[in-house]
Length: 284
Image 1 (cartoon, rainbow, N blue to C red):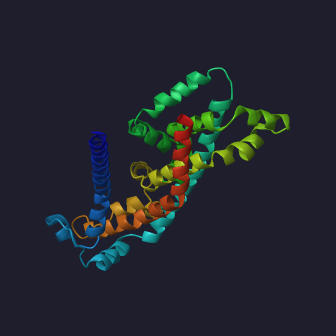
Image 2: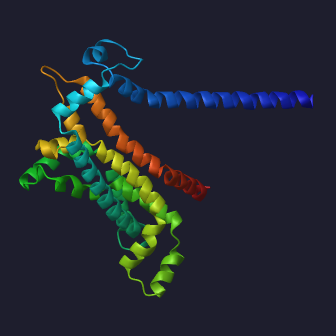
Image 3: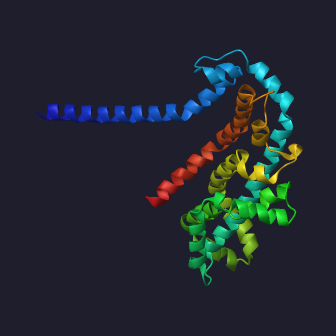
């Protein structure tokens, strides 16, 4: 009877594992499918992309790439996107980390109220203020400027919340008190102690910020009107043939735009996994 019970228990465990593996495979296939469509479509002409469901690669990749480079300055678009994404990532991470440090470790009047405002603002869609944002930068003569795309990103509510949660559990107050006793000022403490301890969180949020700004379309669309300043997503959206959008060339452009994100994620994935492990250990 015991042997039968153990066999039944093992069968249940195996069945549960099979279900979990099948679910994981289904999620992976679903997540990869858009990339598969993009890669396959980049190798076909416009007619096959619109009229057929393509499963096998075609032979139009080089032709599509040639049309893409004829329509837009591809490498300028990549350069513009890199400059903007790196600048936004650096500026946003630095100032939001500083704000999170203040919320986490400083005691001041109204701290909880201000943090509540941050939480409420985090739940509001950014698109709600897009008209007011446009009118404001128009009045300040800041259209067609990277300054307009970089400085407002300092106020990222999710990053402040994310960093505060990390500092609450990962930065002991005793360490800060010891630094104060040794004569360190607040900025020195922030740069010499807080920032090094926040590296896993900074990399995690930095990757999300970089990818978000690399793919950003709406805000650059309303701010930039000079083709030489346009980011890669804007340039790709303008690719057309004589009468309509050139889908083959656009898919090649999207394929090119994905490569930097894959590189960034591959380099940062180990630290991201460490951050997830640390968060799980702290919660446990």
